[in-house]
Length: 587
Image (cartoon, rainbow, N blue to C red; front, side, top):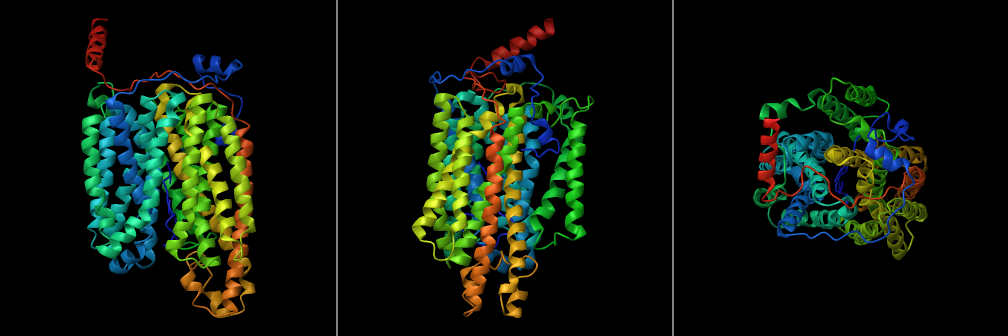
């Protein structure tokens, strides 16, 4: 699930996050021959693995199971809608609340808090159990929606969006954690696909829902729509999300939280994301205001990783063993790159559609739909193959290979490229990304123990969110730098002045370019075309590196058994827990 909207005006209906995985300075060094420090995992990895191509054993799923899956789909829909619903209403919000240049905070603070909070929620889910942490996550999201919808000024709106982001980050993480609790690894992708499909539908509908509210009611319903949906979600959580959790005193649970680790990670993440969000526009990349927080954040991550290895940390936020295995370490890196590449094309294809082809924002959104139409079925096919054959490495190689081909073909795009050709090339890239999208988490989880599933999933979700933000920051820097180099082709100095300081992206609209007469308009379109070619060329390199990284992965047989402390609660659960407690007391 995924995905982010960084420094974006109102370019397209396809601008999204997701939505949203721990970047570690030691990541590259962790991708080696070291294995997890447990006898069970070492023995499994040291031997030659014979991948089982026979169908996995079928597991009976009862009404409670499907009720939980339905609940997760509704929760995922909440997050997905909010990722994109603001894109078509932002201009109206900016005008009514007089936000001025602070409009960027409306979208960016949402994704900043969403990325930073995920590891904390992963640890809380392990300590307090899944049910009440999920309730708190949805409550945060719903509260933030109410505050944003009722905002009387920009500060109140931004505060509401920040709280919404906390909830959204938690949703993106907890959905995968709960599915991992309920389903064996071999079958896991199938059920994640249900949520993924709903998520993509929400992302696709978001811009149109937002536009409908603005046209027929008020922009405030863009946020208020989450109140009834959030309420329904919380009722469903109370009724259906009954999973096992250990009964321990509250004081003991509170003492288990890694307070210092959480502070170091959240502070470092915010410090890094701030210049990434505003670099090249609000902040100049060469200024100390951009460089200083970036350096401090990277140093902070190094301190965080060192702190997590200390013996004094009884329950680390990110257990060091997550990165001691070459396959998991590689998948973390590949997840970062896949998320970055996905948002790379989601944010810069609209620039091509609008600035080069002259499409409206609405039509630009429609032209992005082929990516969803192909990407979602591609993801579904991939998880079916993963379930049947239990092999993830060939899917990753195929996915990145196809994506590299697709994004390589983007270099051919100009104002005269036939639309059918554009759509086909877009579908090729989306199909490749879809093949990778839903098969990464099972590959990351397989080499590690079930007891670490929440920490693994939180780390993986963080890396995905972190990658999505870099996936906008990197091409934005490339695009703005190349545009500045080519400004000499524009003969009118007054027009040239409009595009300094990273303004090329925000001016990439057909309405703005149509305000110029020839030959200035033709010159501008030419500069946009050439600048985008550089963006696609670097994307080829980035995707090629991801393709090569996949070769480091070790093919490991996916488990068909479920061994977790957080599975479905049954009628005998309480009796078993009571018996265990009594036995412990007698001993």
